[in-house]
Length: 288
Image (cartoon, rainbow, N blue to C red; front, side, top):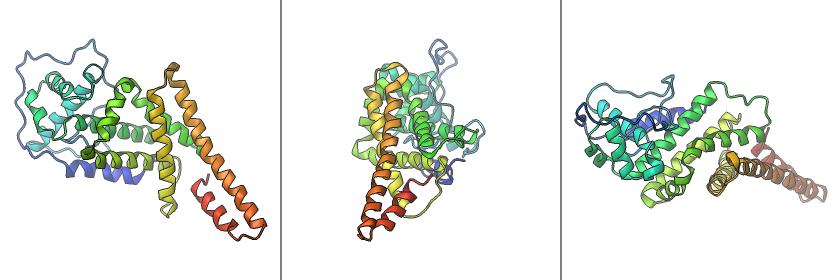
């Protein structure tokens, strides 16, 4: 099951960041060029967004919908369609205002709507990040087979599934990381990654709420981020080296657990008095 935290936060992000503009932008004339049929559609599935791009995407079952009717709701829907259409232009134009303008034309919306996005390029990246999280939640809820795997295998599989979603944009992902690292965008970037890592642990079967909650998410967040950067430089077929890198980093984390436990046993044997506490601490962090 997907984490309750992600389920509750995704709709709240929509309601907090609604567009201040209640009126929908005028549509282009009927003859406006639609989305080209010979271009491959972008990977993400449809879902609403907001001016900053932090609104969550929606799955096919509508479990996380926060739709409104009329007025501002219509305007937000247009913004979501613009951002989604813009994704098909990212490979050519990058995560840019130009891609968003092209997306507006494809969606049959006046390009002037792009001016309503406060952080433009960041809105596009954040829209994609939220949509990927929603698709991961939908995939987990639809019965992603994890129960027969041990904890390390479940975590490796979840990280791989998420990274596969951005594989089509890998040539432009360094730009996306640069946009996320800008000071104005860091709060949203941290929040999105925290929600992603939280989803990893909940899907893997962790439901703890004690102090180890922070330690486990810090460790896994570091593994995800290093794997994401490694993927940018990976030229192996179907990112084979990246998946091996992910498996090795997860294995390293569990090997560290084993090393610390062995040291704890030794310390306990010589009467250092730290064995039980260290053993219990590491066991709770990596409990299978």
